[in-house]
Length: 484
Image 1 (tube, one colour):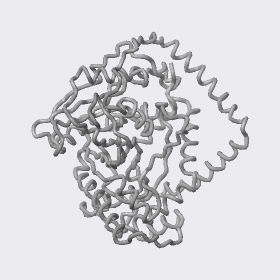
Image 2 (cartoon, helix red, strand yellow):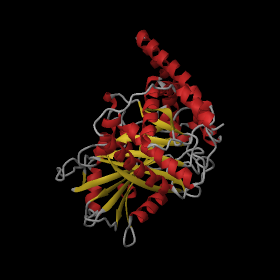
Image 3 (cartoon, rainbow, N blue to C red):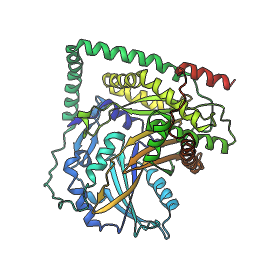
Image 4 (cartoon, rainbow, N blue to C red):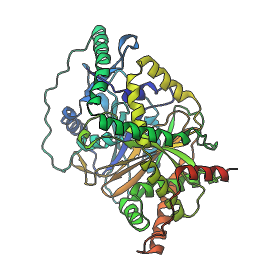
């Protein structure tokens, strides 16, 4: 038995009838689609590398501890690897609607929390018999970074890999309720000891505490409500999904001319998308769109560990800036300030402290947090770097992959970004009833990249003008003053 971390358990507790906490990717492959038995054989040969795929969540009696992972005695691969087909002509719009429907359904808690859907009948220009692979995994199993690692594990780096072999897996016996309770009580006794052990490095602990305190001070601005918008409000159980495309080389070229990072360029494109979306809704753009940006705090030594090691920072997308270069400059300065403010460190420390909370109180607090109207965050934006070499499934090359990010609380639109083999893709999730126009956001993202490329061509190789960096507090005061 292995207990879920406090953060992993949180993703279980916040899930309710309308907040589905699964993440996903939609990968497009060249054809033809592999036979069912061949694909199942490929997946079966990799399951020894991802033990969570054959485990289920068991709750501790009386909510006396966090849930634990145990082997599924009734594991059946055919339940998890599924097939479906689009009606002719199999357009991208039909694929988007299918993904929205599949992602509107919660994963069965009595089984391992993942599904794979082979989607046949897709039509793509210049590709013979293309097909899609929809991979759906509960967020309590992986965060975005480890999810990208998982994709690499399940797929192949070579179109002709060795034949997969089954290792003859046998499940461990299922623990009794008494064993679960005893395991939880022992774990609670050991947790304080782990905290005491950290005192062996007092200098590192003091440094960490100072960084966290500084970060908490910087996060105080998030308490200030953001302007009201149709981006926030009650959400239903059903989802819409769409996507946008760009090239990673274009983002790097823009970065080389105007400075900053690829992530800054990506956020500038997303800002353009939200600007177009708000204008199409006849809402004022003289504001900012505040986004939660998950940040990986996973150490290099932790790669390949399938759990959640993620914190967050809060950025303000300057949708009120029409000029693409000024928009990028504003984001570049803001992100540099946020990185220096240690907000992510503060978020990680707060998450770690949750591990010492009584499980029943932790669950109650998380559930209350998702039910209180959220006036401080308008959207979520998560960027995950993927592998930059081709991947294969059953000998078929993966052409591109699009991410899916869940919605929670009162956030009606979320954006995920994924890079693979020189491609940059954006997956946009929307509430089915209140975000029917997310395609406008996607077209605005692509237009934002085009504007930056045009500006790059106009600027040429010279260095951009350097201006004084304003602080996060100054930018927030400026945004509020524009709002009156």
